[in-house]
Length: 404
Image (tube, rainbow, N blue to C red; front, side, top):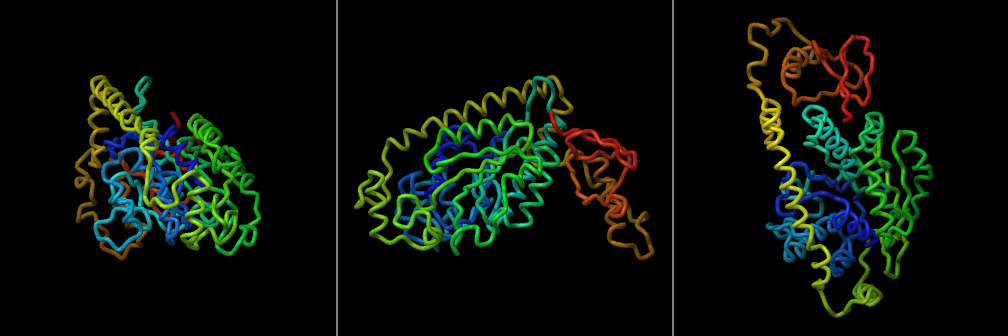
């Protein structure tokens, strides 16, 4: 409920996407990482769902996708949320098989790692193919989190890496309501999260009264798009706003009950006796999303065609990568049988023998070695590092500046 203003700021104002074509390649990516049990109420008046326990905040995402015109997210599908219906595309956690969902999430913090990976991929593509006047890849990745995501190792490790690489095409949006199922967050965590993010070289923006401050949130999102570093947007909200248990642990997962749901509707000027009602003015408010998305698509398609005319070889390769196809016949680089060691060989050495020729010849591979490249045998001629700035390397490898 308290994330409604965040959703409006994202889907109405800040994100670049096309509801008519969910796979539009240069779209912004949205990743839902937080797993708080509080469905969104303001976004499309589906307050009846508040009265049911949910396993994730994904109703927030589903309802906004419905409002902006994603074809599959019909109103009937929204009512199937977290149900036993086998034809539902609104499960209790988002799943990548559904058009418009970027990654499957569920375990807390996992979405942060996915978001960093998406931002990395975009940076690698832009560094490889963008040319002056041809920003083929310039999208943002937006990651929605809660307090529990910031208590997970996978999220914090990913945050450190993103800051090191200066992934300025990445923003984390923190729904900071300071409430857990057990009570206040300070029961388990009292750290200065803003200081922690700054220490990891992130840009930090504070937004207060986040349950209603659409202007402040939108301005923060636009600042993130032009930042020289990844951005952490710390948005203070009140969990369960409008309910009898607003700001309390009970708002985290317990059902409000029919009486409180009715009172919530009255408080926000809605008919307490009407169920699943969405005024036409709400749809009208988001209606421009489709036409705006088609404009994004058309402009970008023209850019790609012009690019292919001027840079035919790179353009052809870029087309393959958009389709998830290998730019070359990768099988020709597989180790030949006669070159396979006949003696027992350690796994890491065998991996190097197989993977290094592939990575040397195929531009669509990125491999991580946890700063153990010599030890894990991941080194080959003309190797480049995924780095923000040029670095010297003891193995005298060349470097790769990923920022455009």
